Image 1 (tube, rainbow, N blue to C red):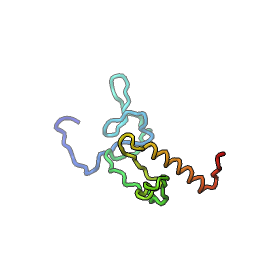
Image 2: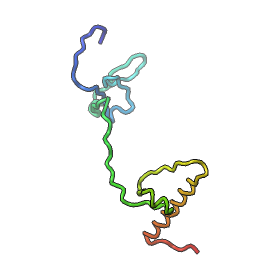
Image 3: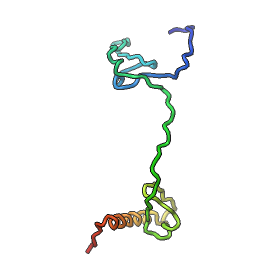
Length: 129
């Protein structure tokens, strides 16, 4: 390629090589294998070409992962929170609040209550003497 060469539209997306044959190798932007030997680059052996494939450089974003709906309730053990705020097992919640409002106390109470509930449900709760 040099200055002044004609350029043609291929109506294809930009692609480059990918696969196990490319791991640890140096390739140029159009997917040719190169090896550095002294002061020049040489083409790589053709046998590696059979271990590669072509992939688009720009790919669309992956879709939304569909998940099962939350059906199991999460009981914190605090009646006012359990009655006003529906929380389901598997939901990630964030406890936001000012200092000294009992965020840590709320979290510890919920953890203890879930441990007690799970042991009752599983039938393995043992009274501590």
